[in-house]
Figure 1 (cartoon, rainbow, N blue to C red):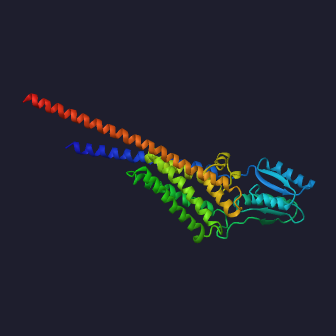
Figure 2 (figure 1 turned 120 degrees about the horizontal axis):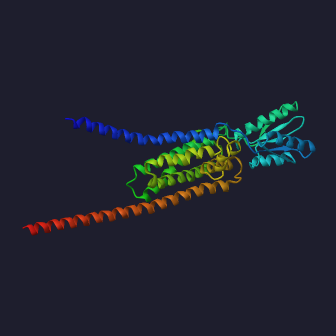
Figure 3 (figure 1 turned 60 degrees about the vertical axis):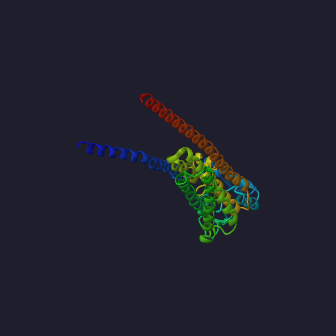
Length: 357
């Protein structure tokens, strides 16, 4: 009778250890999300934020130098000869504000490039104009679509497409584990197509985040989603139950924070700013901005980033295929050895019985 409570206690302890071991994943997610999001977003401050002062005279030079010195590294101030050059810089994302001094000072910004950067620049030059005793006129030379007044809709589109992609990894890798890897890879490509269509629907007819270039946005969403899904499906072969944590690290913690969708790298700590140059979320956000608002300027580089991540996904799937083939081969050899051992044992037993007879 004493075996019953002891057995139940052992079963409870085992179940508790099992639960506690699985709680490690969400706790690590909590730590990772806190470090990533708070580290990237909690205290945005400009550093080397490029702005132009329009004018070729000594007064423009003096103003630019004063702003540079006062900023103490926050701004990178240059003078340009005329307004047209300043507008060109804004429309090619070479600068994020252009100040035209005078009796009626004007600040030109491009909110499609980054609403938060434009806000920071406007705050700085409002104080400059106030020091000159004149109100500041603000001109937006590259406004966002009417359906995206804050300019952050593309970032939240990135969030939706990413969640649809990396959440599908768990389904394909878990529920589809019995399927051949080539079938799982095919499911990843097909799922990424569906996710990209949903994303394009959100961006276009549902919310009107963009008013042109919807086809290009859809293609970039497909390329981005395919990269996420292929990498995730390939990693599942090696990470198993840790796959969710792995894809969240890659495509949430490091991805959203470095995308430039909320704060551009000039307003973030250097680590996240450096990721912005090659991470796939930044490739998507900046690629869509370039395609929709800036006439395709520097679009090739952003497409290259997305393509390289998709190629990386194919490579990871290929490596996973080799690993799974080796595992199958090892399992088959082990099964053959077990059969041979059983056969030998049966033969020995039969011989012993025959001798006994």
